[in-house]
Length: 304
View 1 (tube, rainbow, N blue to C red):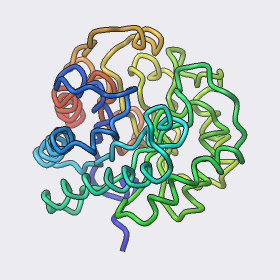
View 2: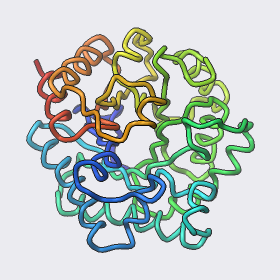
View 3: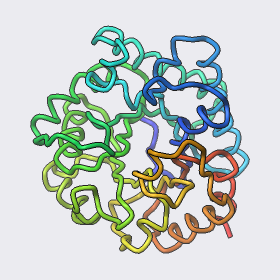
């Protein structure tokens, strides 16, 4: 029987999507092209990634929260991986290995409220000049990764940092075709809108209309609460917030050569305020620039 997803469970869930910046700036690990999946092929860096997720499991248990373990597969799709020398066969292997690593962490935890998710990323760098893609094109493109993942132990796939409604819809349909439960996480700019100017709520409704509401729910990630807090109107389908530590724009962060980890206590309170005003939200956590300090502050503030 499938494990309950956060919107079906009694306890909120915590997630940590900020592993990339943590690896680079806090743990001294180089990410080729900002891709984490090549680290799976080195026992030493594989152990570092497992440790990151173990810290999340430990914190969630301490705070009486469930948690989602995201496999490091955000860039493990054909176009993003090709410059790193990965063909379809090698990509299939790293997708499977990424899930297997998260499964190892879950088995060690021996808890029912730990979910394993495969992280899905957009076809192109979401912060670059993105070529247009139709829903059907996106559906075909994302099918390869979904087909590989359907035979793993994932409880769900989480599509992070999508900022084009058509690609988001196509990705959801590809997951549905493969029989995978999917959470769609959109990214907004400092004005609370997607990169193409679509307001957040409008984007959710548009994607749901194109997919017959096939996604389990929606989230926001890779943005600071100050960028989107005023855009939230308690949309019932928006059930997750995964926040950046920095108030900087994506363009500013792309040019930064040092980590802006913001103020963990302040971020924790800002996320907690969003949770209190938007009762449908069942998942919270940290994205770029965050670490366990930020997640602990979020958990503590959300309970007050």
